[in-house]
Image (cartoon, rainbow, N blue to C red):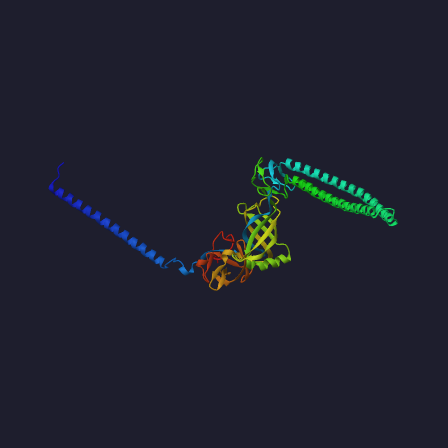
Length: 434
């Protein structure tokens, strides 16, 4: 196909017109989009500045908080400290006689009762010594009998000589006997009197020998009882320090230690400022003490305060106390650290709030109270004792009021609040909803 020059010229003009129209359309579309963008931007700016459907002012926004009700209930007045468990009594067992340790009748760590046999020591040497002492005792008794017989014989002889001397003295006076014979009879009677005195001394010596030998025998009998060592208390044995077969000396070596753990003590210290209250409430009756092992919250034991030390420790400013526990399940163990709670009394109808509701300021303690119109006010309060996670309020609040427990940093007097769901009131109270 052939195209003439005129037709070629017409086709070029048409192509040029089509390209011009295409670029004009692009420009028009771009301009329309730009206009739309400017319009949208203006609308957003207007909305952000409070145009149609504009938001609230920043100062009018409700602050989210967590609240709790002020309650009234009986609360215990307690002192909570850390203490440690102490054996009710501790016995260190030693041998009172020397010899070979022939038998150990328990195992280390056994619970034993008073009178149970613990150790046996070789008793043969003491038995031999006892036999010798008993023989000496019998010999002393025989000597006493002999001395008494001698006294009886010599007394009779002395009586005869005395009567003979008197008869000879009459015969000398009558001239029948010579003076020398009379004096000889008198001397024989006097000598026999001295023999009687010696017999009396021999009797006293024999009695003394009897007493000494009897005492020696009794002492050996006591020593023989020491060859069997028995427990003086109920308690738990510790480490065995001397094994069976070893030689032990009297009163020189510790054999084992026994701790009495039923009952048992918990020893703790409280500030000296609490001493007045402790003494006052002790005068009214027994004070309850509870002890809980730090590694076993379920092992709580309850007992009574039984000891107050006679002096304040000047180095720490504390006073030492002891509570006594029956420890029937043996949950408390000597040397163990425990959380001790000493209950002094019970305060009836106390006003109580969570501890975190109370804030500290330059003028003292205060709380934020939520009013019925969902705004808060600052209320100064006087605080009392702390009970676990709660705090007693002595003055400034009434039961049933609502206090802020979380979110106080955003608050000031008159600020509107919104209670967060799941707070202390479980989201039931909507202070920010009108």
